[in-house]
Length: 404
Image 1 (cartoon, rainbow, N blue to C red):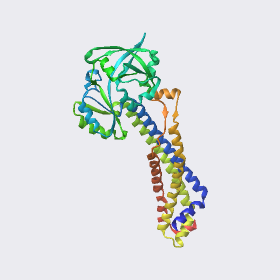
Image 2: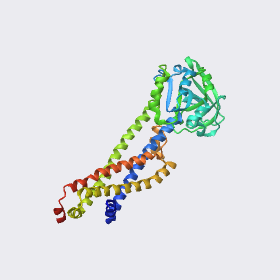
Image 3: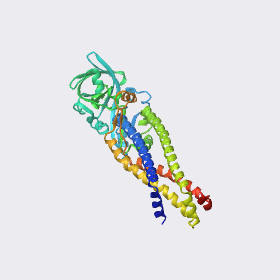
């Protein structure tokens, strides 16, 4: 009986009901799009910078991060590798030797980051092979180089050219060598794209006189959300001779940028919810005032105030649920489309984002939590606003109400 009354009351004034549903649907659409963009952009940023290079967790010799010199490298330890393989959360172990060198061709030269790595494991973690724009991927038994696109452009390097590398090897020895360019890669981070050179791990260790030594082991995770928990476990496992650092510690500027942007999202979300709540409360207030005579008459002919309160709360929640359903129905295809074909900015906007070290690409996230989180927030707001008619009914005098 109550459900029938709720349904009929909603469509007695169909215009008001449709306007209210449309406003709620638009609010849900805006909230879902905004949050899906935030999560999508941050995930893309982390994927570009973390997944393209650093890994989600890195292990170094104790003190290496404070003083990143080759002398703070460590010997390859099978016992350490065995301990790491015991964790099912880890799906990739990438050994690396990293140092700064001078790259040159003819009269052109530029400082760059040299990364010596296992070709197969590096590709499994960062999909480096898929970033080739010319040439071929290297193999572990070769003495060839992969050069980032920006650095190749700066030094006028092409596939099959030779690049000369100068640097300081292990224990202060002189490191100098010539390497054939086997391929050129495009890295998503402009900073990396302007300065990275990859060599096979064995060739790098020989070039730097650092045989059987590493500066870091980068870890790939099955679920990146377990980064914090895994880092705590590893610190207890690997011992005091090593330091375990998650990507937020490796790249604090990126983590701080995400936190700052996350705070601005909450501010804008608060403003949006305030507008939603104000509009919904205005509708409920108007609906209650217009139906004062009706309420008085229903109470006068014997309808209990409790049933009337349930009916009014049900109307508010029913309108809200219909609006939320419409909002999700409209937002879902839009979010999926923008995930497959993200927004890409160029010009000055792109340059601003490049200063932060990532491309100006804005995909959305299709995480289902975005949809039900926003839906629950709007439903909770509707429930709170729906309490107003209950308060109104409690103090209702049927005689005075019918005189109005």
